[in-house]
Length: 187
Image (cartoon, rainbow, N blue to C red; front, side, top):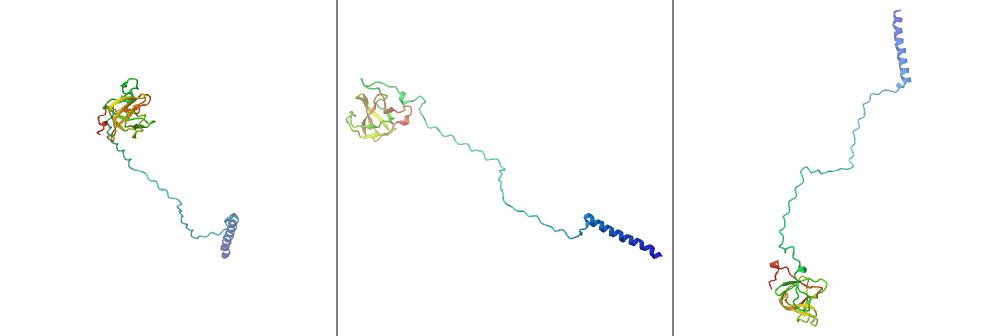
């Protein structure tokens, strides 16, 4: 009999193990548990765009001061050739701003100024036109021809001609600034 005593616990353990298996399968534990090693997946990096930004780490250079240009000598601010004093050198003729030995410049932009061989500028066809700003030196005169003031001048080519100063409304020749000594031509 002693053999029977020990058989009951074995049957009990067998039945108990069977019940545990059935209960674990009923509760969702019926899947087999495997102890396979886990699969290692290396991360994949895909570069789609590279951005480079340059950042200045030193301060910007300072601006170099520009030298101040030396101003050219100019006439006093009050000089205006139109406001030069006028006078009437010929009775019954228009006013003049020029005198003998003055240097005059061509100031007309609307009417061409011509050089003539004679004092009769209305009959003479003229030699050539003076360019705007061209200088002439007054040598002799003035004469009045049909109310125009006519002067004998030395042109830049060294030749002597006659030229009208103006007609009373328009002055083709104006006195050059007398305050600038270097403006006198050397011809």
